Image (cartoon, rainbow, N blue to C red; front, side, top):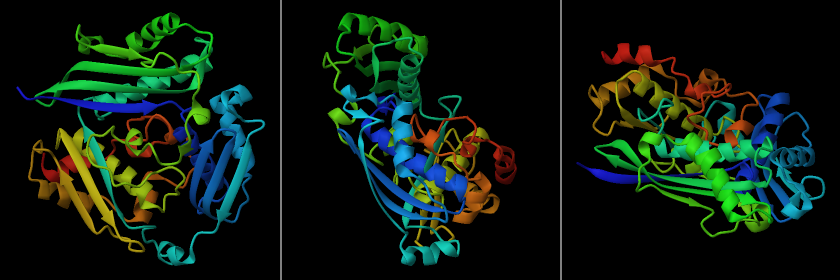
Length: 380
């Protein structure tokens, strides 16, 4: 029996890197709300008492970046100077310019906004057709935020993270090996209370009990203290949690981040399309596990290459699957934007708790509406 381990992590919306991802996407959303054809490429940096926003905007509308960022910080829960950054009083600096006209030449005629390779992945381990470790990690940190915002656990602060290690046997998850849960907290709470509350209200409530055994390790705030957090404890930057955003380390990643980029940037839109196609392939029963690889050249509409890896699970020859994909899907930037309806202000919600495996309003790349067509085209 072949055994191995897969580890994935996720972080809360108050993590400094996620503040930056959400800030960049909140700016994108407001531009798209006013100008659906606006071009946006925005990066954010967060440190103690300071948010710095830089990048390119080409739009016919005006957005007040200062107000957007302050509203986001308040929503997350950074509304007290004792936390190291306060929505009301922190400094916000912006350095915004127009998109390069050299890039716009290719994008204006429907070409890709940059070169690069993008990947999409799906597997039948979970109902969401996602790897189990990253789905569990997302659920843990999302629960931390829910407990804090509902004041069920009144000593929690916005920062936090989780890491889940799953043991596999013959490519199937058989046990949860280790769970690490780190939650920022008020200075006055005892470790005993925090451990008891998080075990009861987070870990035991969310983790599948059939995968927990006497060898499962639970590590809660393993340093023993997590009072200083957020931008006070660590500088955040847009795009530093790309593995958290995708598949938790399972499969490949092209290297480009998603947040702060409008859908003409194939870093984002083609990654969404690759996930959409991969999920529909698995939903169709053509593969149990599949990775889609797309590559683009700047200014060129059609992808340079389309490839798949079924990890030996395909029911038909992989070349037949690729031919079916070329026939059924339009992989040009404009085709992707139209198919997934991406010129909408839907992106701030994607910037935390994963871009994939979210069967929620606006996550059009998670809809399995092409499974029947793929089944027919491949002869399954």
